[in-house]
Length: 337
Image (cartoon, rainbow, N blue to C red; front, side):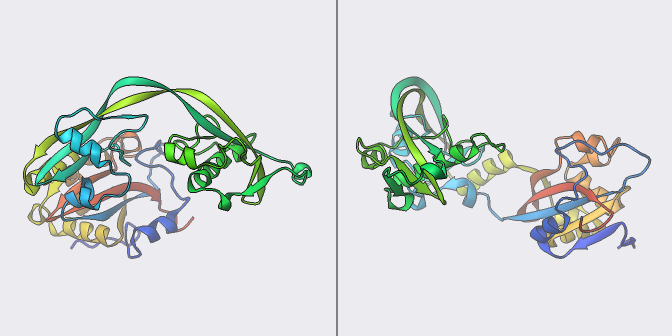
């Protein structure tokens, strides 16, 4: 392999977590942010890391209803498979933690799951808001209940509503997707029926995390989308499903014979924890970047083009496994800030 100075190339041996910890706070630019100021030199290194994603995509991308958790809606899946109308209010029938399509398998057939909005529903729902009580008013004899003593639905409601109470008048905001209308909206009918806080004779105050909060409950009008569940058959075999997932999520496909020895060594180092070089890059590193279709790091102005491009992370297939890679610029001044 071509001899390169250690000042240009260092192999990280500590893994992705160690690399992230060692370089935290040292970012000067990244592939998703603005480039550094242009000058005659480049004092950064380009770091490549690869995270092993396994030898199949189906394990993570396809839901097995028999092993699905409590949020899985079997009734929606069954109705959608049969072409029957099944609707849900507010929530989607097949929730997903990502923007990627949801797939499920039933009796050897693979389905892509989604939903369409078919109507709007007007409804009234309880909203819990909490307001912190001053220490001078905490002992005025008002009914105070500990969060731990409440039913499960109320405990969740207090936890989320307290985020909004804590944020009032303070910078930092609240968790998006949890807090709504400055508190917590009860949408689960079972939780509402079992609630102590929503009862007519419910407690006036609740204690949580060394604070006492005044309880305020309002019943407000909501206009919520009505979702119809859809299940479209897309594959009749695991191999076909794997091909669909590859087409949807995988970029470069690279065989071991496609690369030179130098390029293979770069990938091996990246798989062990990380690989870095400063610009101009070695032939082996440049070959890897081209194989990953990351030409913005090679063509044009490296400080500007790569900094503003939509490059730097994707899923690839190398030999017989999948990898999620990341490219990022770090300061070359030291391993730690």
